[in-house]
Length: 217
Ligand code: GRF
Picture 1 (tube, rainbow, N blue to C red):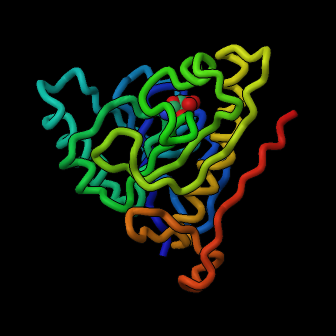
Picture 2 (tube, rainbow, N blue to C red; picture 1 turned 180 degrees about the vertical axis):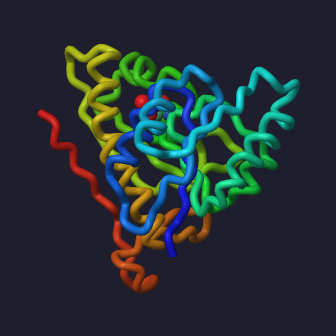
């Protein structure tokens, strides 16, 4: 059965683009939905024949009202998986519960370090030697759900925010399509609050830890 994927964006949508370009067998990008009409990624989606919609959070008086309309738009596409790709809104507990186990996010840090905003600047200020990105299931605690995969990049002595974020973004574009592919292949299992990736869906004996190596210079 083909799995429908709905991707939510707020801006340029480069992670969405990486997922679309990876053309995952067995998956169909059913829609790209933005909370801003000026989200750059909408044009790419439309050019690729993907349904697009805008649900503008500013048109609603409360988070609850916005999330209800957003969920109705998402559900009209009958998603098996909802992918947050630079979607810059905090979601209500009701929304998150509705999509439990089928809502994932990418965060530009090695969680649980640096949840929230401005991760690259904070990593530089903290003087950490490695930084990276995490794909995780979404729970009602911000940037806290079970981690599916992480990519590590070195922090170099002469890094600034722009260089470090570019190095992390390159890895985001590798691990997010990878995580979506695992989900579509039903290789991700949630067990005791942790996400495990099976080697080929053959059962608990064959869990593997997905290791992603950094191949940037
Ligand atoms: C990415 O760094 C993502 O991790 C973060 O916001 C950024 C979105 O970039 N949540 P894009 O819209 O996917 O290009």
